[in-house]
Amino acid sequence: MLRQRVLTAVGLLLVLYAGTAWLPLPYFGGFLSLILLPALWEWGRLMGLNGLRQQAAWMLSFTFLLSALLWILYQAPEPPDKRLIGAIMLLAAMFWLWVFMMIRQFPAGGEHWQAQWKMAAMGLMCLLPAWVGLYYLKSVADSGILVLMLVALVSVVDIGAFFTGRAWGNKKLAPVLSPKKSWAGFWGGLGSCLAASVVLLFLVQRQYPLSIELWILLLCFSVLLAAMSVVGDLFESMLKRHRGVKDSGRSLPGHGGVLDRIDSLLAATPVFVLALIVLQSMPGVV
Image (cartoon, rainbow, N blue to C red; front, side):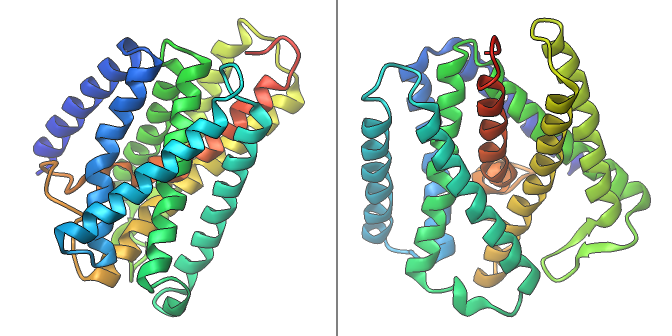
């Protein structure tokens, strides 16, 4: 099972690297959409949409809203207004904080989110800002380095949590939602992300001088990113518990569905983009 997970993960990372590093911005948008299409379908299944017409209506609604949002954002010269992007990411981050409160209440509090229209709204709040955020990262650095840095940090959280959890994971983090997750894994993922962020900031420091205050602020963003990665994972677990399924899909051997693979990334993207906007506000940076 572990070998299958690793092989699938390596294949996904190679595809992601090729699509992110080599594709120009407009085509990268199409690449992102191809990744999100199965995730949208899986979210529809979690909502209880089993008919083809219902799924088509859900996916067309998302496409319309995404197109409208991109039209608004990219009326200005590229990259778009940082304040507008920042507002969208801040709204998304507030949504994820609300999700955290719902997770803490589970299995109570289902009346706040289990209605189908509410789950549709949650899907939009998860997927739309993530798409916009990743597209923005690519527009800022066409090499794709910012997107790859984000994916690397989220992967570091996952890997750190996996190995520390296997070694010392006796005390469970959320036994009702995800019995395999432990507090040791949580702290291991957070510490791994923090260590990786220090390395990245040292690399940034070689080109752009960063004050000690900015170092502290960005490391705080790193801690928040790691925490949000876990929240994204637990959120999908909550939805799957509600629907009574183990995985969101079967498209990725050893991982389940696309949502099972990107749930942490969806929650971490707004935090990373907000950290970038803070950096961009510094004179001479980005």
